[in-house]
Length: 187
Image 1: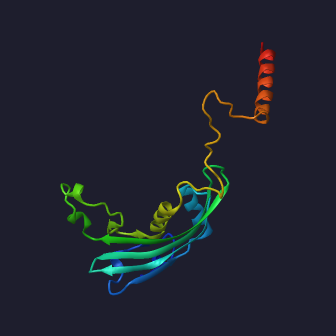
Image 2: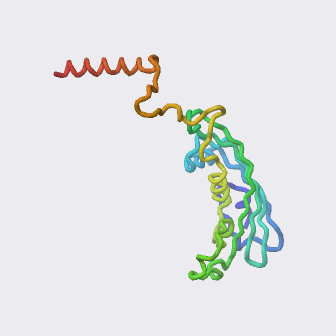
Image 3: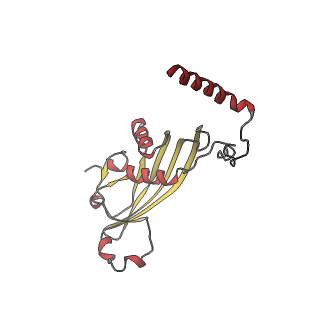
């Protein structure tokens, strides 16, 4: 059993098969196809670069802690102008995988438990690429803005106020003339 899963993008990792005697370092760098696929999944224009590295640390005999760093460059359309916005992300990624998680949580107590989204049940197989993808989804800006772009608040004015200059109305006047003409031809 090789440990390729530690360093290859889409390989499932069997945590139960890893030696719990020491930490296992990993370093994932996806191929350009992987990056394209991830961009599509996450609704990004593109993911230019991504590196996910860190280590899996045994906790006791069966549990694992993942401590990593995700570095990525993502491109998204600006929410105001749709100009591509490039964001450089460097985020710490921490997860704890507990073998007997379900036994510790009793349904009636669940409401009082603080939500800790870094603690998960130990999966049969762990995809480090999925962990990277989730971390990227959380880290990517929700409302990317191009520099100097304001959200288009100025385009909307209260009823009764002239929002447009004469220049702005010209295309509409031409459109109206065209519409009138089509209307007459159609009769």
